[in-house]
Amino acid sequence: MPARATQAEPKPASPEPEEQRPANGTVTALQQTIGNRAVGSLLRRRVLARDLQSKGRKGQLISGEKGAVYEIIRSDFSKPLKEWKHTVRGSDGKTTTIWGEDKGYAFSSATQIIEGAIADKRAIKTTVDSLPEGHVNKLAGFHAWLDKVEPQMSSVQFAYLAAGIMVNSRHAPAARKEALRLISAELGDKEVAMRMIKKPVIVVVVPRDKQMTELTEFASLKTSDSGAGPGKTFDGREWAHVRGVGNVTVGSNVYAAVTEENLLGGDPDPKVFAEKKDSTGAVVTPAGTAQGGYTVGYSTTTHEFAHVLHRNGLSEDDKKVIAKAYATRRTATSGSVSKLTKKWVDGPRVSPTAPKNWKDAGWTDAKWLKHLKGLSDAQRKPFECYSAQNDAEYFAQLSNAYLGTNLGNDPTTGKPRNNGREWIKANEPKEIVALLDRLYKHRTVNDITKGGKLTKGGKCANPPKPVPPPPAAPPPGGP
Image (cartoon, rainbow, N blue to C red):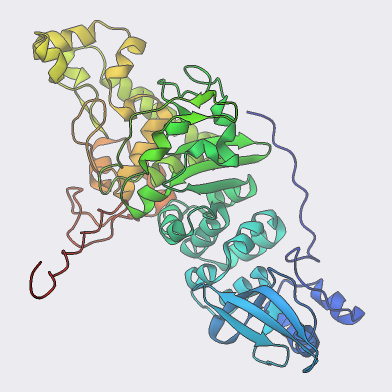
């Protein structure tokens, strides 16, 4: 992994790069000390009248009554009225007009708005949701400000702010709220969350109608030779056809990809598996088999984010706990035929029954297991459940199970996965349970029963497709 460039601490004088500065020297000096709400309030009172009569820049924030936040999308000066008119957009996407004489509004910044919510004990979730995504994303560079506000927030509040900073949903904005719901549940440890913000980690939502490698952040995977050939994963799949990835480093940034279809439910658009050609007509990506989405209740979002958390958020001691538990479980499920079928979080390490195509070729279950026992550890891995592949997949699948998002069957063995904290507590080392408790704070993102099944009508990651509406009634009088 390339060395990460050292990031300069932001200057307290600039809560946000695009903030408009008053001309008065005294006010400017006060504004440069922003960091508490009292100063922010004083500034707003002193410069309100002048600020709203000056030209606002596109992207500037304006705050109003009852926590409303608007982003300027256009400013025009009315010569007859001799004042500025600002066309603004709210968090609901609707536009309205604010005139320079309106005294209920003030130019503001994301930092001021969030600090105001903390001081007034308003819901941080509601505040973050009200802000334009780009303004929240930029807070990743405000290290001193983050260090200041973090102690003032609960772990749940800081987790939601951290998720808002990391998630970039510009390609699929409808999926943002669900992405924040899921990812904030994995950021319960403030120290881990802060480490990831400052890295910085950026989670990009890939739209269902685009290949992951069509996005700038993941374009390097098209030529990456880190797997089974250029542009391929370790198991030979085309990166262009993969729907999600945990760690892609570009400069000092670490990117993770999650998908619109897994957040909102349904399947990817079949065209993402189509053949791609360059401008000369040469094939740059071969066609792949069109695939549907994952099992309802299984979240690739929590899985991929667990990967990036493992790599970039955990301490070295935490990583050793995971590596040790993984090695111990491999040892405990190696050797005899009976040990090979012992349970992992994804079910048996290998299927106790021969696959249908092997049985069609005359293999019995006993012969199948004896054959697998005779293979080396490396030769047997293609037949093993996903969590047995390496310690990274082991941790990611344990994270899914803890959060209640490990529904469905393992793709290799075809056997049901295990789901829920109860299973982990009963089957995994106490050190692993303690680590997951510290990270995820007993939270789940799916509503599940004690046995790990979805509860009817409860919260669900990767929800089922909506039921199609009934056909319209035939017109009166028949055909």
